[in-house]
Length: 281
Length: 281
Image 1 (cartoon, helix red, strand yellow):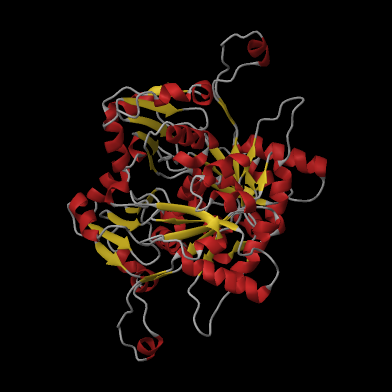
Image 2 (image 1 turned 180 degrees about the vertical axis):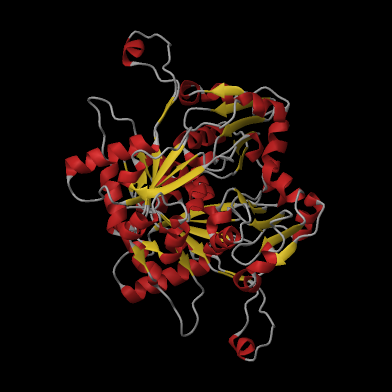
């Protein structure tokens, strides 16, 4: 059996009771660690499970699914994913491959940023499509998210922005030379994301959002030290969110109950009240 | 401390290890049981927790928050929610009230249908706003969801439809007479939802979707006997999804990897291939 187990968002104890039982029954345990990160070192997982945990990087997951699945028709293998198992396409590939090999698959769900973001008070059913913001490079500043934000905002919906993570990436030079030397991990901050958003608006000038648009930054959602800070994009440019992971939500039109919830996290209640778009229905 | 604890989607063991520890530390434990349902009786929760669980119905949660919060500044109280704590506005109210009373609140996240729906293979970031479909009555057939589906489909996004739940509802006669007699619980099936969707399209005639639109019905997501069935709306009219809860997704334009995943659940691969809208980018 292949168990695909969501670990949730915080530390080792955010696994479900069912997930923990499954993991303890496994001969091999892999942890996917390039699309999201745990807030604790993997040794904490190993202590809870009483078993070693193997790190599965992008290279392994994208090119060597067979070694993960080896023998899973006879013994139990766990593939651990931060958040929920179906947050990333890669894990869908793993499920399809397992089915081709007649290996039974059980998924054990958990919280992910896609639903935990509800904790800021903006209702999940008022979100449009989720977008991703990647680190801009000198010559590569992809802004396709701008059109998606525009679509969402045209119909007054909120937009969850997932922020880039670079784990075990090679520099272009090292990649060209085939050297397996990796850069230190990088995680986009709310501040960096807001900077990039404003740069794109400055270039595209379609008035999709501006410096006074109300947004909410969140960090380490689900962890004891999570932070939720609401304000204008201008205000969020230098708000301190601390350690990764960070996420950002651009608020659309808010129901007054949503505004009541979000206001408690406002940097400045006056600017919040001035710029929040609130409906009474 | 008030702990708001998500129970996830399946049985008693879908609570997180952290959630279970919190619940075991509580003097009183409430289970919200009118916006979603567990797939197991509450006695199974009580056996795992070693404590009694009090049922909190709509009446209690909407009009008697203070009794839930009583003493929570001195002892621990748990409020259990099927899925994630922030699936419904009501629980936001509870958090705000607790803060007014200076009661510390800790939320423990979990899977909800809003993210677990990813298991059908349609990627979460390609969903638009989520809609709710309520039971039509003879003289009350609210179709505001139609406009929202239209907005989503105009920009090619998928639409998650949450289906109505009626728990501890009074008949109009009993309500008028002030008799606290409650109707048996009712849960909308995928078949009923599709019927209502088609009725609204027949009335509105804006060609937002039709009988050949590809959709996917899901039941008991996260439970061992979950069902995922993809097909045209016509085909889903009489597909058997078994026990509640049911959910429905109207597929927008699919990336070919999404189509590959969803196809494995198709009632009829030929009609699926004929009517699925698949992009190659």
